[in-house]
Length: 177
Image 1 (tube, rainbow, N blue to C red):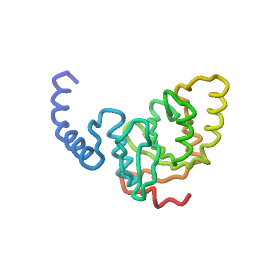
Image 2 (image 1 turned 90 degrees about the horizontal axis):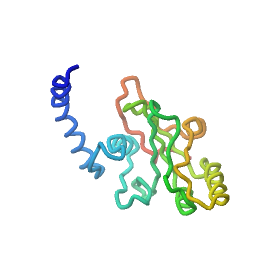
Image 3 (image 1 turned 45 degrees about the vertical axis):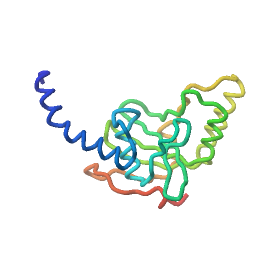
């Protein structure tokens, strides 16, 4: 494909991208779908029927209609097989993590494959391990990971793609823990 052909194709697609951005801004207050996984965040919020929490980068990521907050994580299996946590993980953040359920979205490139829910009890082995490392080193941890395999084996499956990969509602609030 020549550069001119690529530009022509992008110009053809861009009106749809603009509509996607408009939808993201209207329903989830996502100002830039190309930043911080904004496009993927919109998919997860719509499928799970959660709302984006935009007040603070330090707080949780989403809330349900009952005011229950969630931590959201996503992984692109084309790039890695683990979920990132926090670049400066400390005791205060671990305490915050222990208070909320986590929603893990699994992607193959841009296709949403599955969504899992995990409670703090399910993630406790990681919290203990991280706290032990903090106690031993006295330093913040740099982005410890949660393996995708652990999430798939221990989490509650909330959403699994259908044959055509179209999205459909799978509300988190309907999941029995």
